[in-house]
Length: 214
Image 1 (spheres, rainbow, N blue to C red):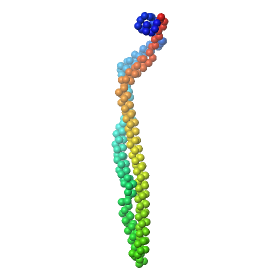
Image 2: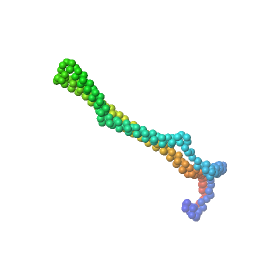
Image 3: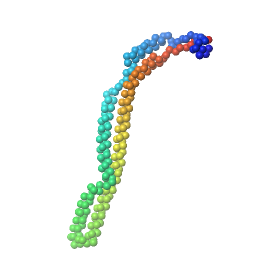
C-alpha cells in the first residue's frame, strides 16, 4: 500500500517500534522534565547584562562626545589663524619691524654720507634705495615662507580634524553596538528560553520506524 492508503485507510501500516534504546528513554524523559521545570522557573531565560567595564565605557561615551566638541572648537580656532597666515603671510605683523629697519638703515646711510659731505647726492640716494630694497626683499621672502608654512600646517589641521571626527564616530559606534547587543539579548530572553528548552526536549527525539505491513 502507498502512504496515502496508510493515512486515509485501506491498508495496514504495520507495527511501530522505537529506534531509541529502552535504556536511554528514562534519561531523555528526565532531561525533558528538567528542562521544562527550568523553563517554567525562568532559569533558561537568564541573560548577562552590563558589567562594570561596559558600564564605564558607556558612561565615557558622553564624556568623549563633550571632549571631541571642545577639541573641534580648538582646531577650528587654530584653522582660522592658520588660514589668515596662509593668505597674508603675517604682513601686518611684520610691517612694524620693516618700518623700523628701513628707518635705521636710512639714518645710518645718512650719517655716513653726511660725514663725507655728500648727503643728498645721487650716490647717497642710490645707496639708500639699494639698502632699503634688500630689506624689503628679505621681508617679502619671510612673508612667502610664512605662507608656505601655514599651508602645510593647514593640511595637518584639516587631517587632525578629520581623524578626530572619524575616530570618535568609530568609538561611539562600537560602544553603541555593544550596548545594543546587551539590550537585544535582554529583549530576547524569553525566546532564548524557548530555544533552550526546545533544544533539550526535542534535540534528540525518539525516532519511530514502521515495521511490517502490507
